[in-house]
Length: 207
Image (cartoon, rainbow, N blue to C red; front, side):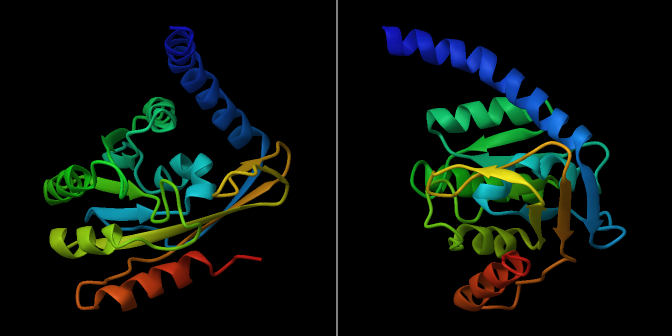
């Protein structure tokens, strides 16, 4: 009973506080964007590592002033908190992951992509292994006939959690650098080569 009550309180409070924190971090940091001037009008899959997820709304909004995006978020409780936090930025979600309700999430994502919606994904989520690309991102891109944009988010000063993904929280008053790729076309690639390419592009600025 107590656990249920605490979860209800967390669901009410954490997303609101989390959204405020993200906005505060954004406002108090300098920002540099490295990437194409435009990503065009075609919808796409935007991918970043799970550990760099916190500031992804501002990478997406760089190219889409009005969000039209679904994020694949795990069905676990922490996924609920993330989904509700990102809803403050106008982002909708598809619940599921490679470890839970995988087929439902995959089919739902392909359907949304085919309808013209953008998709956000952490290719090593929800539980790792860290910096290893799962099959889903390639399958979705090929089935829906869309391209992939990868984003690296690097902070000059940050806190890093001890979680499996070494989750990064930028400190205020530093510099956040967004490295955004051009469109990556994996339509004619086999699965292993496409995954290797995505992983390589997501590690370009890794120290």
